[in-house]
Length: 231
Image 1: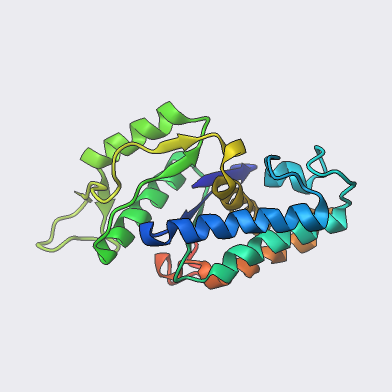
Image 2 (image 1 turned 60 degrees about the vertical axis):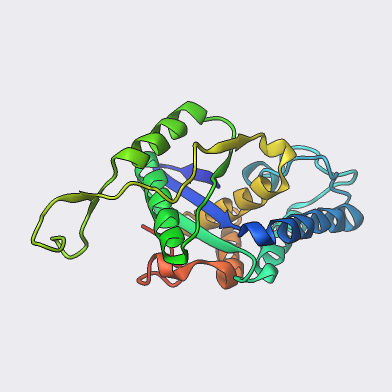
């Protein structure tokens, strides 16, 4: 899981990988990075952070990468993820105007999906907000009031029903994104959603790139949104 945001909008994206598919997906991401090295000179050990990469900052390659080539790399990254298909990879997305609400909505969606699949999840995130997110996960594991979308729960009860996130195991695991290709990949997903929601004047066409992820978007998360984005 990783996040992005701008001007009050908070984005969280999470790539869901079943344990049985973990090695295959991990190898596919490594092969994608090898392909980038061959064709664009981007170093294998160089962190790709979408905001920085798309703005032209940094020297991730042994050659000059102009804006056109950087966008092609961006699109290629999204296409490589989508190519794995929903059998190997599913993408959860949240876009709301409060960071804590965004994180809570993401955890609730993951928890409900794990309940439906009779499975469990471990959250792996970028470093930086360990104390804040760990505290929230622990709280939601004990007390997590959920309002009914119909106004009342069975029996006529109103207000929130306590539904702890029992399918999310332990505290989140925090990794340095510099050493995790998967966290870098989900960062590109979050940035693609941010640019879809808030296009840039200088490169408005990037707002179209999120659609490349459509094959792996978990649309059941929100059936009122064509990509399943929770809002």
